[in-house]
Image 1 (tube, rainbow, N blue to C red):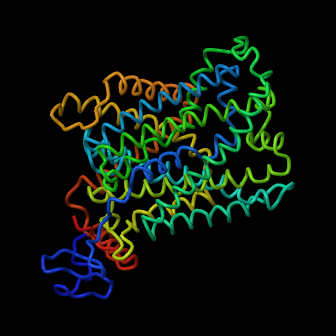
Image 2: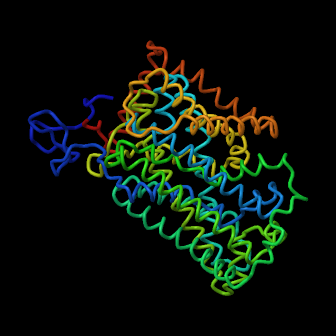
Image 3: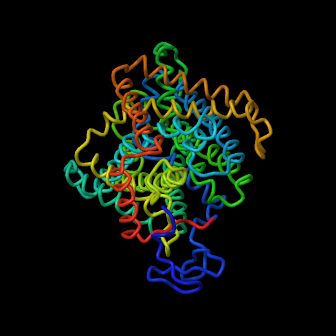
Length: 496
């Protein structure tokens, strides 16, 4: 949508919505600043986005999937380290892409640059209609469950109370991201420190127990009697899921200060911190719990705290809730930029690439997930949908890294301030496609349903994007949608 709907006044005059235009024709806010997204993501904020999203509820609640499939304590720790290294390979590949393609949008942008608009739209479509609303609802439900648990102990929390607390959490995250980029980033830093503090509260007592000589659970740690090679891929699958989130800084590249330096540095520092924390946390668990006790526990961190901290274990659910809130906040901040860029490329209605005239936030792009997430929260079968879609994440990430290799040969002269050795993206790409194959083999029905849902993006692309001559009724409806939302949300096109 063009500036014809933006209520800018005469040159230099303030209009009714708080904007003004200078003699050069640029749209300014009431303080005289250009309306647009600034470069507010520093190194510290970049690190907090990555760590804050990766460390969700999983490491505090149930790392038993890796232990179950790896077969022994020693092999489970090897898997945690191996998944950290593989995730670092993926993160380094994305760091190269982020420094040579300096546009926000993450997966969507890189697929668009390497393989064209149709493949990028299919990725966007699957993300918008199913993957992201379900993923947001799941992490938000964990927030609702653990924020209420101390209030209802020792009784179970009523399911409707969990959903209401979840709805409040989702709404507060959307509101925060709509009001201020700076405050969103600052709160993300605080929440990230809370997560690291929570992990420290597990690691420090665990290491103390280890140095006291509590090593009985590590005897015969590499006992191979229960280790089955067929289970190792499933263990790595669980581990890679726990590390997922290293790619989110690439969604906000345009807002990163000095991206050539900040993006690679933030990714490397974050992955080193997360890998160390994950491995040490698991070591701490094993100083207190045997493999059998860990497999029997539904909430590993709570069991650990009850054994070592007594009454203070009540604070663990609060730390888990804060951890989930940090993941919700960081992913909302990052994903809104993907929808913002997709709208700018013409793959979503134009209003989603507009900026609030006073807050300088992509308000419409932030709110795009809100109705679908709330709908799935109260009506949908979220966990089934996640099963359908889990393999699509690795399929498209594999396609993105394959695009990096493809661009090395099709655009060898593209400036690459940060360049990784070719074996790194090759190894990671093969890992992704192996996990996709594993999903097809282990759960063909759900995987097939997820694949079918994503393929509905093909007709949607031709109906809404490809054909220049849309039916007049459809064009009028899109224009009315753009105009109405722009007026309601007080957003205008960003000044470049």
